[in-house]
Image (spheres, rainbow, N blue to C red):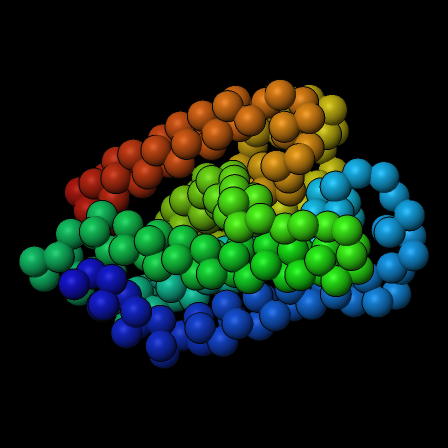
Length: 241
């Protein structure tokens, strides 16, 4: 029921066109990169899928985070318009349910993007590396790993959007967080585990360092922690609003 309500709201916000645009842009990047610099990548040693992922994922992850930021801001812009949040408090609908409905909807959109992006990377590897034999499990593992690493960013950005009545404020905060994380030193494991930083990591890189359980565990804990923090925040806002 909540998902249906949120989906109807998103039809009026431009959320779906934003998802499609971001998915197409992120998926087109590795294709264009290979068309221009195919000889550079085919000469590299290693697994073709890992080579293409390492070469393209930084830009693709940034586009994914742009979708998360814009999607969260668009979702809550409709809630704050015409004092919609205050009106919802008198209805038999919990604000926490609305928040987690938006979270699920944004995660589903992100799932579609990640599956498309990893499928394109797999297709590029199969086309430009004739000896490469792709497996469905490899594509699914990569997409699932990237999804889990992006969940804390989704949850945190939704909290920022729910806390700011002005959409431009939450949008600005999201953009600032993206650029701050890109300029921080990347040799520290602690900094690498921050939201807005973990989506840049690839499965091959983390596996090489033996940190897969660490990243999965911390990202899962961060997601739960931000969700609980949002629940407390909603209670405080309802008492003092």
